[in-house]
Length: 158
Image (tube, rainbow, N blue to C red; front, side, top):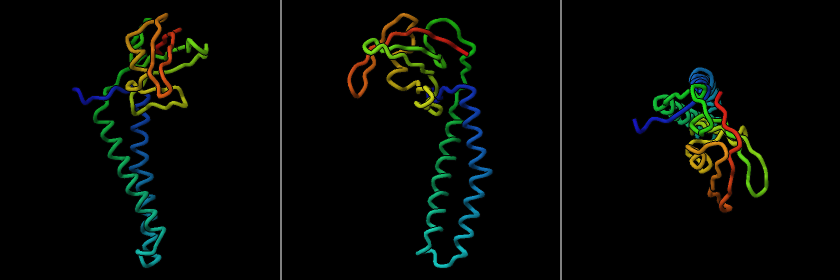
């Protein structure tokens, strides 16, 4: 049980879709690229062949990683939660107490985190500081630039 990784239903679907695409679309394309490159002769000096083999290696590694993620996934539906306490899947509005800059973050599993979309991994320093806290609480987060104090303004689950 300890090797299970929490993930939202949407994150799980995205991983499954990427896995299927890599197996059924990308893998055959790479195999075709390798076959075409082989036809060009001497493999020692064939840049196309080596590039295709490198793509194949990367793709197969990513497939293994995704299969591991699917196998370890513990799907948690945040829409089943409510209240003003921060839990996995929460959409949290926080404000930097020094700069008054507001920021929306959603606490998700490590395989679905994306800082550009405001999705932060449950293992990130911000998420670890927020988990278990409630609206109105202040948390201190250690960053490479030092400590940052945030106040929790809103918690939503959907």
